[in-house]
Image 1 (cartoon, rainbow, N blue to C red):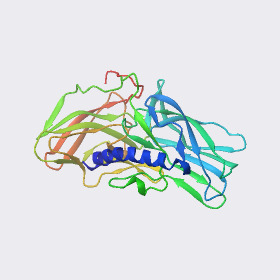
Image 2 (tube, rainbow, N blue to C red; image 1 turned 60 degrees about the vertical axis):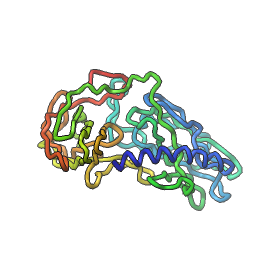
Image 3 (cartoon, rainbow, N blue to C red; image 1 turned 120 degrees about the vertical axis):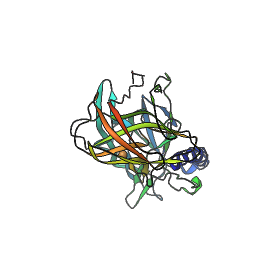
Length: 324
Ligand SMILES: [Cu+2]
């Protein structure tokens, strides 16, 4: 279960990292005014730039918006040119009954002058979706440009890394559950057994027309005494079926195949869900329409293969528990 270990370690490092930031706040890094945010809520975030690059003025500040933040609106700043880049999200979000599939992915304020001796804030508003993992820190990379050179606040502690080694940490925001607490999805699905494994709530996520990929989610419990691995699958509606994880790579949130498959530890349970581990159906041959079912064969290293009839569902993000 490398991925979960990574997350736990990263979470453990965060508090240390936090104190490191405070300890050196005299040489303030690029930080946010806000330290935590609830999912399914709008938040105003101010990027605080505490110094220039080696005495030089800052003339450009840009922020890369990670997956899971939508409805991004930057605040214009007198004396600075504002520019946004938009792009497709990896996932589809539901907001007020509408599907949101793209939006601002990068904001740049440029052409101004913030002297090394001065301090300023760069502000944007965004919605934190419940695709974000609660209890973990979301890192938001920021790049600060000066006439000669730049500072890239994009380092993220990885498994086993001492956060004190990070010279340029990406500022992070702790993700909290929404106060109404209604978004937990109930696990009342039928349990499908294969060997020592129990599969629950396997679904395919509905896609917009012409989508090239679709995601699949499920929970796998291992009641045996040996670890097993989900190594892939096959289906008629997509050419490739892979098990993916999400990782921040430099400044970009990327997904990639888990090499060697996803471990289901003995006595453990692994949930593939939005924003994290997922099955990726690639080179889709048809649209995944809500209400349809499709046959998919999942393959485990020890338990073998199992063919399932998977329902296509719209994955809601409204924060309430629809009859899922
Ligand atoms: Cu993927």
